[in-house]
Image 1 (cartoon, rainbow, N blue to C red):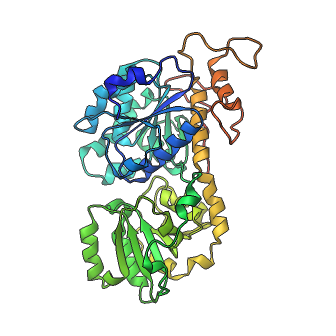
Image 2 (image 1 turned 60 degrees about the vertical axis):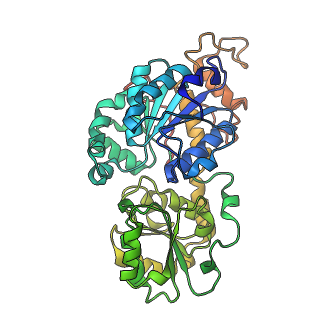
Image 3 (image 1 turned 45 degrees about the vertical axis):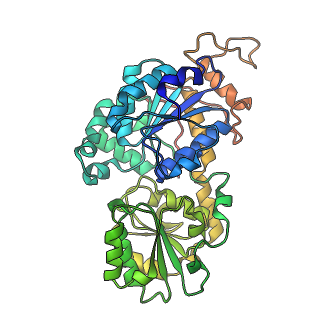
Length: 445
């Protein structure tokens, strides 16, 4: 762990490499945390100096930190109290870009950037439906998020949403002009995806020949609506001889859900497998991946299932599943809270209707490479290097001083950022502050 007070010798203010800092709460085993680590590794491989800034250095994914990733713990007693330490970090480390994730961390980042001054650009990321979070999550802090975003969003250089639905919701609820919001899908399919999904069946149920095994993966919390999933399976069970259900994940609802399984008479056919750092082998061997959520931001686990060639059954919740599955082309969509609909979809042998190769091709649209390229484009759009003083000469410009934008672009095209996907020329940014930036790409589904 790096202490904020020690950052000056760790990050060279005269560095030539672009520097990005990612700020989030901790490394609990959620989708946001897993995707941030994948993105950090991809950017480091492209030559970017990456720092992970955490409220608290804890969580199930600590063991999955990419080698060489610098980690800074702010250590506030609560998220709001991260503010002084984050201001110190920005003043000492001076990263080119700070990328913040999740609501309360975003608010702290907005205030810290304003107080720190300097040239660090700020991107805040919304990973869930803000309207649903404000309505359903406990505590005044969540209910205040739309108002806080409305008042503070101009302190960010860009706002990123993980799906088109989240972007539209954010614009409507928080009053952020839609032109200031870019859509960058989560980085789900990485270079190690196939390796992580391979391996023998991880549970005897997958090989005993007794019947299909349906898998659900996610926190056991009201947002994921595991109660409706259990009721759906209980309705399907009499028609699905030998069928069983495996839930991967932990959460406060687990004791009540175990009681509900007993009440419904399906306890012997339901396995609460707990958190699994790598759920992919379970998903790959499943008859289908089932998501019963009330709302999502995107739905990373759906993409993971598609990448494994495993059929998907999902509620048509706001937002993400319909975008990923293209309205049902790549998986079954049923209304939110519809136990009968979920039961019918599980009983309808989805593997016969959705060819595995077509599902894998769809998943490729949500790759780590694409997300890394989008962040490289943000660096270029924000004219990385503008505050460095004397700019390096343009290697292709006959000794002319390199403009900040050409500096970032040439790092890509010369291979110093190792952008092996061929990002191509990068458009200049708009004005800083409240005006939209033109270069941050929208990765449409």
